[in-house]
Length: 221
Image (cartoon, rainbow, N blue to C red; front, side, top):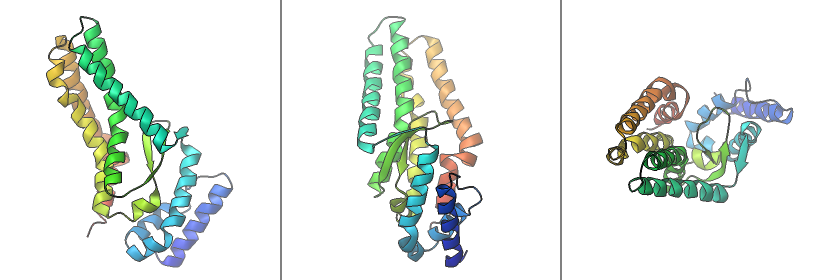
């Protein structure tokens, strides 16, 4: 894709958003892929691409909030989950497994986005929003696409992988504590861990974080 073709695609994308449509059929993501292959194109077009990406995101995200506020809420929920797990070890039935279940759910819901945020910021990426969207079981964090494009592709890839990896670790990391619960809780945690791995293999490699990981790693020298 030549630079004039990239500019035409960006123009089509802006017109589509101006008229209330999405980016389908504009060639925007094909243009983004071409830009990723050339650092000079990244420097020239990253800010414009980021502006288009942000406008499109604001059109499909169901609920958004600022990064500082969202991080405070998500970190608080994660801390509540850790506290609940701690209390579960001392509680009597049924409070022990109820607290354990709440804590596990809180960690599964919060660590995914926090993983992306921490790893992305470590690599120099910026983020613009926390958000909720249809079809996404966890709160997400939106990357600033200009900073994303200016980050080396291997680091972009591992930012995508980080959320998936930490979420897969959680059920297995909690197995020692689950042994103090009723036996069915331990079995359930093993099942949750296995189901998450199978889901990643069957779905995420085609439509989510692992697909993005594989996409970005191809741009690495």
